[in-house]
Amino acid sequence: MPTAWFPVAAHGQNLPSLGDTEREALSPLMERKLGEQIMREIRRDRDFLDDDPVSEYLNNFGATLLAVQPEARGEALYDFEFFAVRDPMLNAFALPGGFIGVHSALVLAAQNESELASVMAHEVGHVAQRHIARMLGKQKQDALIPLAAVLLAALAARSSPDTSAALMMGGQGIAIQRQLNFSRDAEREADRVGLQILRDAGYDTSGMIAFFGRMQNATRSYTDSAPAYLRSHPLTTERMADIEARTRGQRYKQRADSIDFHLIRARLRVLQDLSPQGLRIASEAFNNQLQLKTRMQVMGAKYGQAVIALRQGNVPKAQSLLQETYAAAQGAGAPVQSPVLASLTIDVKLAANDVNGALKEADAARSKFPISRGIARQYADALMRAGRNNDAVDYLRDQVQLYRSDAKLQDKLAQAYAAQGRQALQHLALAEAYAINGAMPAAIDQLGIARRSPDASFYDQAVIDARERELKARWMEEMKEARER
Image (cartoon, rainbow, N blue to C red; front, side, top):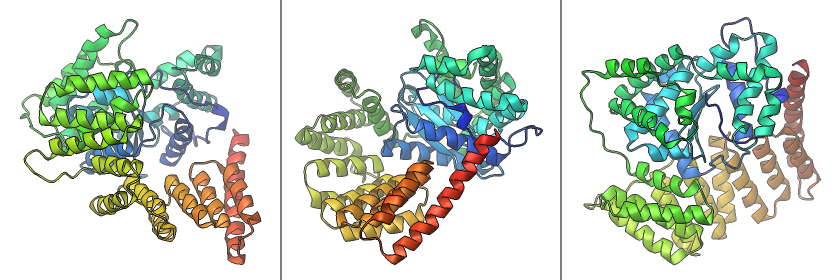
């Protein structure tokens, strides 16, 4: 685990019950519950990169790693979630229950997908070996909740040192923090699992040695300490020798990087600092990248410049740069299959008020990329912009049945109902969005608003009553758990 990530509201007393502490590890259910609680705090932070193309790329990339070793999901068959954090430090981290975070700077530092895969596979290895659960489960009952609190305090440390220090008072914080750093044995286990995943997924296993070695050399660029990833995942001489021994004799695998890898790196370069100065620095980096004159580098640079132009409201420039991006991506004329490019195309057309063009592009994109949640939401946006609110509602109602844990889809459905003037259903959908995000009081409040809506039918009232009973029961159970702790 890292020693410092990014600021969140850290309240250890609100963490879920951690289960039977007599066991050597937390139960998978309790481990997941703890991870979900921490993720609810992380998602509220401004440095959580809530960006659909980035999130979908990381999760699709992670899914290819997990596909070759499904047992990494454990007995609880965790649905892994990979997410990005806006941070200039080279770092990645695993949370309890299959949540894996990647700092934007680490993706930018990876020179190819094999290097990125080496870090993500290593983090999967920590989850697969249940290192976090084993560390937590070995603590005494009175140490479990403070230890879980430090997990959140570590998130607060970078920009909220006072909050972090308050949670680590009494001298117990230092001892607990040391336990968050993985042991040498745990690191070797994660390396072993990670290398096996890399090998089975067809990635170059030497990417792990190359990337870790480059991060180690980067210590010269830091005046006070090593990169965060090496502080939380100590890269000893013995560990490097073990990795090299495991990869010795393996044939080098040439694996072409996906188009989306280069596009996402460009996107993250923009998103990691949206200030005017940050955008100028990113623009200069893209200009330098264009001098390399390789097809992928040109494509990534043009895409990044298009994202900047759109952010700055220069839609004609964004349109022109997007066309140049497609030209570079097509190369010898092969069709471009990229949800990242398709997403930006829709955004640019909507910004240009080309609603029909955006709708046509979104319709084609959802056929090409049927599991893309971001494209689905953009299609709904295009339908509403075109005034086809009934179609938007029908489409979104189907989507929320397929993806019941997608809060953003519920938000879109609420927007579509609002466009129709259906207030009761609008607030019902908002209640579901809040419930998915774990905000039970807000969800219950929305149900109250829905009940008082003038258009609430008898059937709506029955649905509201039933859902309110369910959510109040869940809230009471959560409050009971908190009191018992």
